[in-house]
Length: 111
Image (cartoon, rainbow, N blue to C red; front, side):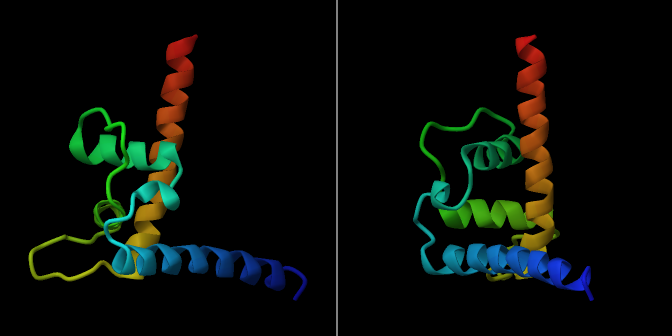
């Protein structure tokens, strides 16, 4: 029981963030994505999805949520609707990996 309670608290934080991203992407789609995502996160997603340097201004939240969900298995077809929380959850895991990889490559490039 001593190990279960901290694990549940940790999982609740993750579930809250995934649901928050999902709801904000649906209710405020034109809002810039930097209200939720760090600069490194949204730039990493942009670099991976578009294969070019990120713009100076962050893309919309809806564009970023859909791009992240594609990393989690969302196909983003015309009639698919909005991505679900499982696709976002899996995609957010990969986004963190992408951001760490870009930070590491910048560190190596400076040496």
